[in-house]
Image: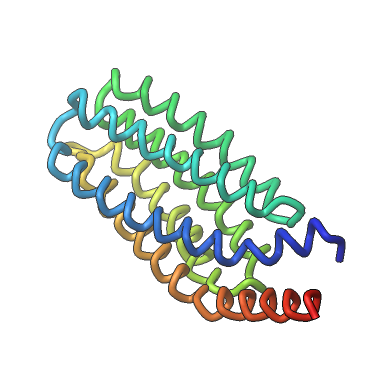
Length: 198
């Protein structure tokens, strides 16, 4: 294992844990704000809809930078592109109404869920990734549901808040399950540091 790979390996569990905690908090706040404005499409709800995939882009970039030299990186950059397209698509879809928004969101949920499934599988040895794998699979199913819901009368945005909340809970569970891995990496880093200074 080269120096770069080792260094990246030492920081990945801790960086992931912090990122997952942030994503959990963001998802809950976002869901609460969307519920308060989900009855209609207005400037605030439109901004929230575009913000969610935009935040996903930022999170994927942070994740990819901390994971340089590892297998999940291509999937993370693919997610950046997918989420950028979703943000643009949602901004456009809001002009046609809630059904259009649900179709775009549903399509994004399916594709990004497949990517998350792949990234989580590639990272399973790190620990704490089964919630991410399960979340990816559920995202695919939820996306299909959103697309189907778009064709029904009285379709609303409140289900998106539930989707975000469930996703946030999965991030929290993953962050907590990463705790032992983070502790192990820190102990290993401290052991290597003590050997180098002796």
